[in-house]
Length: 249
Image 1 (cartoon, rainbow, N blue to C red):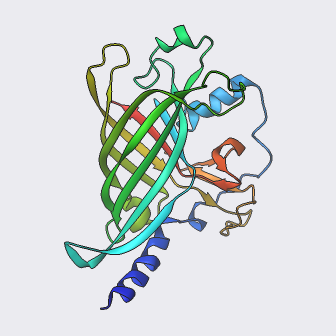
Image 2 (cartoon, rainbow, N blue to C red):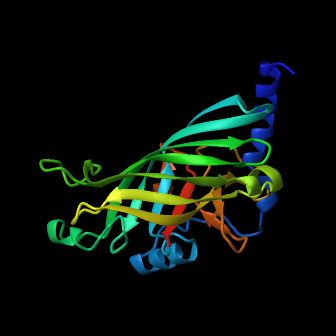
């Protein structure tokens, strides 16, 4: 089989990572994004974000498909993505000491760049990248995206997208380590983490796939099988994003 044919096969198999129609239910599609802060906090707890130490969103992605150099019969999907999200105050990437320099801090902004290489047959592979914890630089308008790094480091681990690739369930997992210098002592810290990917999917009232990015009917799949409506702040210029929930062990 030629390299071109293998890549076409890989592209076909990779479509399994984006399941949609099998997760329809009979609930309505009314606007549930509004409400007071307590309602929002309850929703965040129920949809997984409230219990995560760090929640990151895939802002964009660049993907290539190539034969595995160790096994040319297997196609590897290599993806590079910038990620942006938030770490909860009091967690390792948002230590309470930051409250001294940034009063009224509710969360820390986290920016990352990650690369993964995953088999399109098994959905298994490796991931690595860099990250920064950011605050607003002096002179910035308060609404400016935070851009001054206060903690920087790397991460690496193994990624498992077999649920999406093999069973067409829009979930994935990652496990590995974050490594960074302690902001107070300067000593190198290595923390074990586990994470869950939630892949976006779209359906209409009849359970049919919705692929247009401007449709409001986009969801994540909750752990209990229910649907989590994707909020406006979980989109990147209109596109629903992949969400990664990280918990340190």
